Length: 124
Image (cartoon, rainbow, N blue to C red):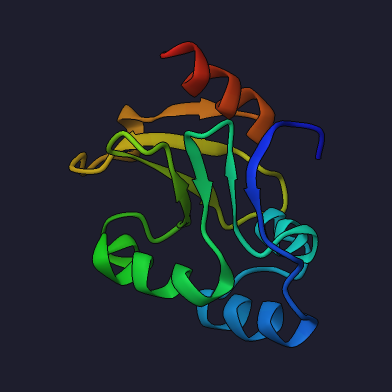
């Protein structure tokens, strides 16, 4: 994962990843599981936060992700009021969406985290 990390945590343990992924009903090859094996949460380019295993479940509840976006998981935010959601599939598609928006159709969609970070940094 070649990008600027403002903060990068050590990798999560396999047990932490499996437990958290189980609570989120994530497939074994979900993007966030791979990320946690690399870094258990991180801040990218001083703007984009990817949630750690110990905080992600609380974020799902706070933003009522299961109710409004049942096919997605909240993996982070842009430090500016927008959420970063990921489909619960094996192919990563990242959705950048205003925190108060009730429809995934209004999200900006990116095919990689690098693409999303570049857009956030550019102010899109």
